[in-house]
Length: 195
Image 1 (cartoon, one colour):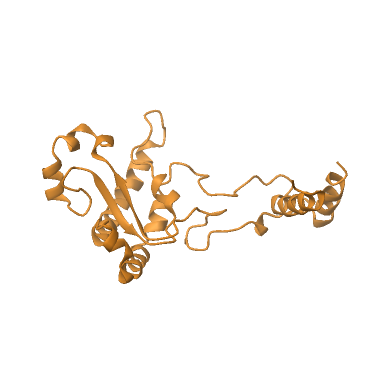
Image 2 (cartoon, rainbow, N blue to C red):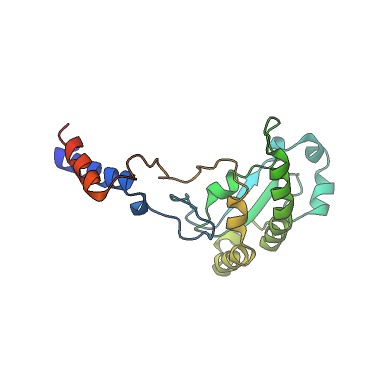
């Protein structure tokens, strides 16, 4: 069981990060300002989507889509994006808003952002090649190659700009009390420790 000393240490770390947001862990690998921390994959990996989860016009024409873009569509019509390098912020990819919600008033703005991002996305994933075999993922040069492609094309910032979930980062938190003076913050911490 956690002892009182450990609980107080956790409280002190947490309350200080709440009151002083600049102490929170930041994501250092994006150019756009991203508060908090984005979950990252630990090794080279691919995102695979079985054809059953794709629209029927893709499922019904797997050979056509494989012929058009064999770097995304496999012969069975499934999608393979990657290989993505270890350290890639997976939340940035999985939270992309592909199409705006029907009731979203800013839908046209999002479609414009998506259209502007389209060339970057297509170019990057085409260069990555969709080679998602175990041999490719474990290849010594695959990690460095994928890192270079992702960085050169600005993929992470492009994906962050298309995020459907604006608080997809970890430890964003709220800023209650952040505007207090340092003395008032310390007094608040001392007060809260009494409970």
